[in-house]
Image (tube, rainbow, N blue to C red; front, side):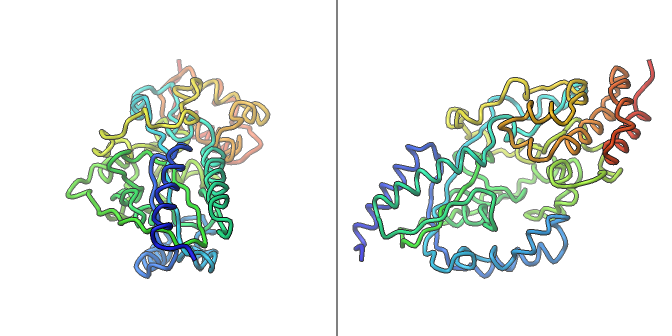
Length: 352
């Protein structure tokens, strides 16, 4: 059995290794269930806020706690990598001919980048403690990364429900390593949102029925990424020129003033062609062209049809008569949602 002094030393060396691998945020929490956290999740699902994300409810029993997913787990290592943007995420708000892509999706796919670093840290831990068993997770399993990050002291879940770090603002990719080792536990972070409601007021679709509660069914990130088929007409105008995700509630957080771009991993630096892409060029993408253009990007996951559907809503909001031709060409698209979006956009565009 590892004594307390050796365990503390291991914890310090583990944090040092994590930072060497590019994780700017590190903490450890226990793997046991937090009844309040589980209750809040059940309430959120009970109110239907998950929309069509059925997997949230299907694997509720695994989401309740790390030990519900893996009974042998004793500790959770919570980690964060910064993707703090070099440019103002709101800069394209008035550029109707350009498309807005969420900051997190302008660089390499975070799933691949973060998982690679998590595996490297897990291998290091097993090399140091051969009896340790580990499992790594990054947004691909029933793991509640944000509540676990808060419990591990990385930050707190803000009123927009995302993790807020006092050192890195709202710009963190989260990952977790479950382990059978008993590691020194970090102090949880206290909520420092205070009376601020900037994120709530910034939401274009009023997706927050209350502070700390997100109704995904009204969230632009959900609508443009997860939602299949036509988007309800009540939300189309509010999409503006956002074609993949939305940064508004994150971008207005006052804690971002402490986020240093120098901490951002190089893999997350934006590809030049994704910073301010032209709508007319995006509308011309067929399936093969879409796959080539977004190779290595998380955007590739939603497929050409859903992506072009989003671009058509943006075109319809642009007021740019120059987009009539590429929009009209899509009114007969094989995908019904694309054709519907094209017809909606065409009616809204002015004639030369």
